[in-house]
Each structure stands twice: as structure tokens, then as C-alpha cells.
Image (tube, rainbow over all chains, first blue to last red; front, side, top):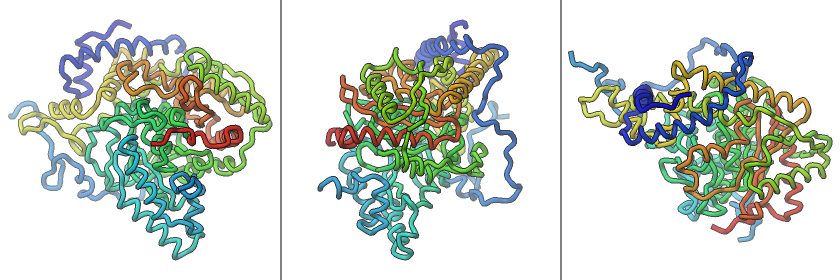
Length: 99
Length: 502
């Protein structure tokens, strides 16, 4: 594996929605390099004929009965919100340009 | 006060009996533990929140139930205090997960584990400290400061559930709930001289457990004795329709096993790959002595090889960050928790970026970045895909081993408790603490840690891990209970009696 580049680290931070200062990104680049080099050993034994395991239980399509159950009230759901307005979550503007 | 009348020194089983017979009220039991917390928690820092009023009210309700219906109206742990890890929700009580991003959050609902504890009359004293979102092996990644090991306050109590283990070890509570994603119940138990069990994955509901890695997380009991842990296990376990990964089968007979511990005729496998190099001399010595003791008690001990266990740590540190980067995406500052930088001009994307950079600590950020990388197009097959194959190989190793033996044993952790700060700047060194506990999380199999003595070189507790097949949790208690009884016989007193007074 190639060493992780400063541009890649900056891009990962954007994907992960982490607005980090440059010095933190530089530190992360060094740490991720060391960790990735260490965990790359998984490829030594991961042969083509081995099926992947995503979960310890072989469960598929677990459904419940289609019956209305008690759930949170709107007031409860909004109770921990950083900002609300008219019984809804108030969020910052979602478009980049005011148009 | 002598040991026999000090309510904080009693086992959970004894406390339940004291409350049932009326020798002490549940309120007196709760107050004794609240007083103990007041006396020692400034030094230990096991709790992030103490719910004095709620605990006394819950205890009062147990006393009222006894007054109305007699002892028969009480469950087996009614009136027994408990410390709840701060990663499980409790209605109206702060739940931070050790993170600034959830500071001040008061959930509107109980986790299923919390609900079952309340219904059983267990008295919840408060919420315990932990590494942020359960990422760590020392509690040093808590945003609220580390917990200190009651054996030596300059040392780590393990993690992520260091608060729960330290609360039990310092007699602040006879019982605690932990969660174990890579060893976060078992490793703290080992370094604090207490008992901890990770049940079979799916054995205890994850509803209301704030997810770190959904395919690995499992809540379980922390206690000072094997029987106490079994009693708690029985209260919290069982199918829950609110968790689609919950197993819809009877709970293994853990209490019966703990009451009748016996290893005669059992086949016990020592995992070759989890001993020797990398294990502290005193840890290895106490482990070898315990294996010899198991043979004396009538077990047949053989060495077993699990050739892919050496790859488990690497696989774990790809699978966990991948799942965690996805799970922690919900902390975006919109519906709950911190919101930073919302000045009326910044966009939602900018506010999210600032919120997450402000609210998450270093380790959370490290793992989110690692997971984001491992799941990226172009790297997915090499990293996450390969890790999932290793997961298959580790599971096959367990299956092959359990064809030869009933249970496997190893040291729980490679070392005793290290000094606070010793590994904080070296993520890889910190990750190695979980080298022996991680295989069970990958395979979903149950594991127990119990104290087996003090390492001669530093006088600190050593833990032995027992691992069993899926849904054979009761075998952990059979073996753990037998070893515990034999050790107590040799030592003449519980190991925690040797801890310094706080």
C-alpha cells in the first residue's frame, strides 16, 4: 500500500465532516500511516476462496408484526435538539448559495 | 464496622437476601453505597453522574413492595445497587458516552437493559466513566478525565469500561453493567481484580446501547464474584423484539452453573497463540498456576492452536473503525447533542464539520478517519474486505478448537494495569491490550475474566479469560466458579481484600 498523502487525509476529513486544523491533519497522517501498515497484515491470509463475515449471527430479514407501537412524542423527539422552531428541528442553511 | 455488617462489602447475592429478610432496608443499602461514593469517588472518578434521588426512590419502591407483598414479591436482585455504564440510555438521566458531543443529553427512553434492571428492582446509582464511545483500553479517552485504578490511583482501570470495573472494585457498587466490543468488560475486570463477562453476541439486547461497532458490541455483567455476575446476567439477558440481532432462544442456565461450579471431566484448551511472547512474566506465571489448578480440580487440559488469532487484532482495527465511522455519523449537531459554529451564516455542512471537530476527542477522530479510509473506493477490498475474511478464519479457528475442547483459556490481558499516560501517545501499544479478548468479539462467542492472583513483580491483579462456544455462556460460569472457589480456598480471603484502603 502506498503511504497516505496529505491530500488524501484532507479529503478523508471532508468525507467524515471533520473540520480539523492543518496540524491535526498532519499528525493524523503520520498515525494513520503507522496503523494502516500494521493492519495490512490481514491481506496475508485473506485468500480468494474465503467468504467474508460481516456479522456473527446468520440473520436475514428480521421483521416485526406490522402493528402500531407507542413511540416518542414530537415533544420528546425534539427535547434534545440544539435548536427547534415551530415543532421542528431548526437547521442551518442547507444550500451553499442564497439564490 | 466489621466486614460482615458493612453493607458495601457484601456480595450482591447477600445484599438481596439481607433486603428480602428485612435485616436492612433497600434504602439503607442504597444510602450506604451513596455514602461510599461520596467518600471515595473524588479519588477514583468512576462515576460521571450520581442519581441520588432516583436511587433512593427506586430503593424505597423495593421496600414498599416488600412491605406489601413480602419477600416473595421481590426478584433475585431487588434492592441491590448497580453502576450503569454511560453508553446505555436511562430516561431523564445524562448519557454522555464519555464524549463532549453528548454533554447534557438526557435521553427520552430507557435502554432495554436499563428497563430490565428497573423492573427487577435493581437500584441504579448512576452512570460510569468510559473511553469516548467505548474506544480505548484505559478510560483516558474520556472527555471528562480518566478513572483511577483502586489498586493504585496512578494506574489505569482498563477500558473502555474502567468506570464500571473501578466502581465494583472500590465497593461503590456490588454490580455494574459494562459493554464489550473488543474487551471493554473483560480487560478492566482483569486489571481491577474483578469479574466481567461478555455474553454471546445477541444474548443481551443492544436497544438503547449507543452503538460503537454494531456487529461487535455486547453488554454484560461486572461484579466481585462469579455468582453475582451470573445473577445479573440472568436479569439483563433474553430476547428483545426491539433489537433485530437479539437471539430468540432461552438464556443459557448461567445461575445454575455458577451455583454448581465443577470442572471434573471438562476439556480445557490453552490457546497457544495467546501465551508466551508479549505477556508479562507475572501474568504468565499466574496463568500457568491456574491451568495447573484446573487440572488438579479434575479438568483435562490440552494445548490448542488457533492459527489465525494473531491476525484478529489487525482485522478488528479495520472492522471496528469502519462500523464506528458509520455509526458516529449521526452525531451531526442537528437533532441532539452539541452544535458548534451555527452563527446564522454558515451552511449545514460547515456547522457539521465544526461540531464534529469540536465534540469528538482524538481517538474518536482517529478511528472515524481510519474507518472512512478503509471503506473508501479503491481500498475497500484490501482492507475491509480482507478483514472480513479474517473474521471468517477466526470463527473457524474457534469452531475447530471447540471440537477438541469444551472451553478455551488464556490470560485476559497481556499486562497488569499500567501507569496513566504510559500509552496515551502510542495508539498501537494501546490497541495491543485487547489482543486476547478481540477474537471472541469477532466470532460472537462469550468470554469471562476472573482474578487469579497478583503479579509478583508489581502486586497488581491478573485476570484469566475463559472462552466458550456460542450460547454456552453457562460453561464460563462453571469454570469460573470452580476456579474462584479453589482460589478463595488457597488465599483465605477474596483478592480485593488485598487492595489498599481508599
